Image (cartoon, rainbow, N blue to C red; front, side, top):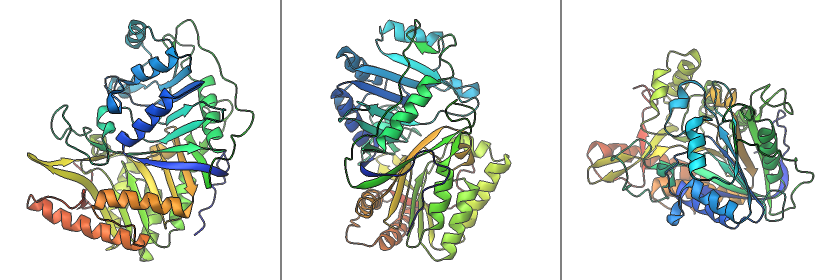
Length: 448
């Protein structure tokens, strides 16, 4: 199998990296918080969604507490925050560039810098942490995990003690990754591009402190070799958002399409939104070849999907997903856990794919056209057979409740699908599940 580098990518694949998948937010945010606590020079963060009261693992406090402590040690802290426009500005987990936010920051005597960045009707959706950029201690964290209490769940997905039971986003499955080495320089370069050209920095409340924020210099050399893995940063960026990238970038879409087309043994996908007609039509070809395809999605998707079914692009995605269900080698499933009061849905927010134990991608990109040609996204893709195989084992074992370490990738995916179908029957009788996954009907997914 040879997944190519997308020709549209600004950043070429780099040899010599450490890539460590971090499965579930309890694991990821523990590692991120540890890195921030040990930062010596700088912390840079790209934030899309933020619950300001969410507490990091092991009693570390909130996002603001964590960064306040770093700044108090003399670490340079910069946060690039999405400034939502339109209805999204009313969401409880967004932090807008407005007087209310300025009062919050003033009340905390915030001693670090923020800029707000908008993408019009679309989302600045990158979720990136960059610690000690440009130093030998540099570490980047790239993925799709939002900063929310439900996203702090660990791989065991224990019943949460906050909020209402079975709250939609109260128990989230997600994925991030740690990146060190030459490819991390591209994460650094991306942050500098966005920070220096942040759209709202000269608008009222568009930066903190109001007296002004400092620009950044781009990296002048690549970070040193750190490990054995070939990795690449791919992005979705609209044309015209940034002067240094006037034509934008659409390399995530190209790489997904080319990677899916190369599938020979199996395809494993986790994604919050499985409605990209272009990707699903390529998957039809994969299924025609008899390759097993397993897709993990939320059992109770975001309500906006059903509401948007009249949009031609969304409608085409629904039709393409339903067509996948005509193949016996396709399994769509969602995780859940039996509680004392019934089944709790575990919300799938991850955006990852694994192909043939050879290639994988982790990032912020949903499989829908707006993530490819609207929202600003970032993925880390990597080519490393041993690493990818281990990553596949971790995801399959968590979701399926069995050990797949001794199985080929194809066999593991086929067995996972069997577990999911058996669990769907168990749910009908109110029985405990094996693992978490239960099969869904692709023809009815997200239609209510």
